Structure formats: structure tokens, C-alpha cells
Amino acid sequence: MSRFLYFDLPAVAAHAQHAVLCDWNIHTRHGASDNGSAEPALRLFRLRGMAWLASNGGDALHDPMPSMALARRSLTAPGVRLPDRADAWGLPLLHDSEAQLIDLIRAGHTDGATVFVVDPHTLTAGVGRQRHLRSRT
Image (tube, rainbow, N blue to C red; front, side):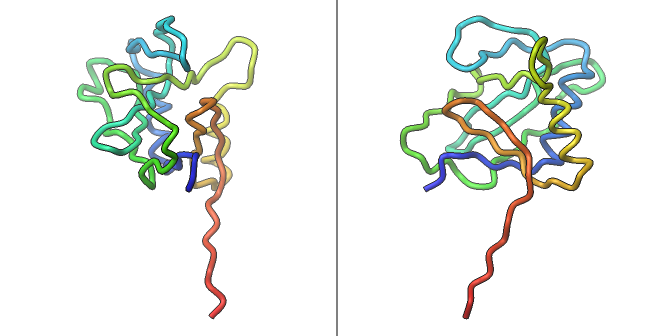
């Protein structure tokens, strides 16, 4: 049983770039706080039993926004309850004092990483390569 969500990094990178470059951003909830924010972010939510990521950006050139990034597997940890699309959690792409999530995504994409990983309990994210294990038969 996995408690992490895995997304294809190229799709996530496209959404992150869209959120940063668009004209305006949709308000998102950051973690469990009720303070809305109109900063560039990736929206994390559930729809039809699956986990999704999407840009929170909107503008005249990208209407409708790029399609959503689907998690590679359905969420299997029973203790995780993602919000629905209308009340999505936000993964902020730009911070005042911390490392920038947009920089992590871009660097990982440039270095050949293929997976974007999110821990839905803490909303921490990372990039990497997914290992494929072969059976020894």
C-alpha cells in the first residue's frame, strides 16, 4: 500500500509553467489552512476516485487550461482523503524564504527525472526516477 502519489514529471512541468506564466491564478487552499491564495500553484484534488494535479492559472490564451495530470495509480492509503476539485489543495510554486518548487521541477525535468512525487499528508513534493524491478525467474 503506497501513501505517496506519483505523477509523470513532463505533464506536471507543463502545468507548473502554465501556472507561473498565466495572467491570473485561481485561489487554492494551502494544506489544511483556510487562507486562500492567488499565487501560482499546482492544484491537488480527487475526481472520479483518482488523484489529479492541475495548474491554478487562467488567461485568455490558455482557456481551457491544459488537461489535468493523472496520478499513475489510484490512491491506496485509506487514511488519505483528498478534497474534491472545487476545494483543491495548493502546492505553491514560489516561496519567499524557501527553495522554489518550480525550480525543483525544472531542474528535475532537465536532469532526466520522470516522476513527480507528492506526500498527501504533508504536501511535500519531490522529483526522481522510478525504478523498474525485474523478477529473478
